[in-house]
Amino acid sequence: MSRLMLFVGGLCLVFISLILPAEAKGKKKIKRYEAEFTGYYPDDSKMEGGYKDAMGNYLDPSEYTVAAPDTFPLGSYIKVGGMDNWRDGHTYKVTDRGGRIVVQDDGTVSIDILMRNARQANKFGRRKGWIEVAE
Image 1 (cartoon, rainbow, N blue to C red):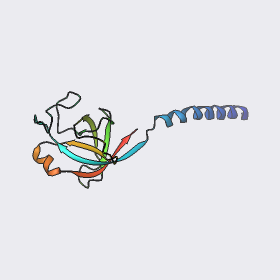
Image 2: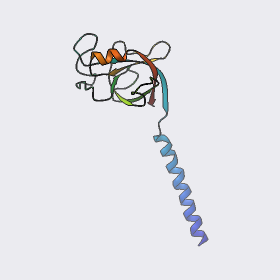
Image 3: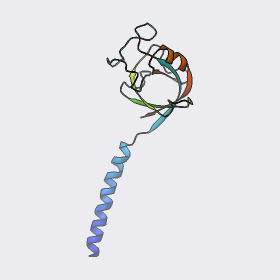
Image 4: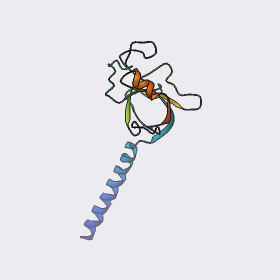
């Protein structure tokens, strides 16, 4: 009986040693960046850039989407915070780019949050905060 228990215990140790590294590989590191947020909205003006995002889809203000620098792949997700408003803690999908959406010299990331209209975007203004990204 004790040999059987040793054998089973040994199998368990082998199994655990094989599984744990695989689980550790699947976990992603979260990186935080300082960010400066602005708002944009669907409009066919030079400033706003049109009715479609960089992925070719129509901009839908009911979706949580943002324009981000090209260092963040289209289709990736970012979590926003530090603005002290209702947007804190929400996760947004990167679906768009923009001429002024860059990583600034000091490392601050410019993020443009999709809004419903000009009034909402103008009221939002420019805000400082942070983003978190899984790497």
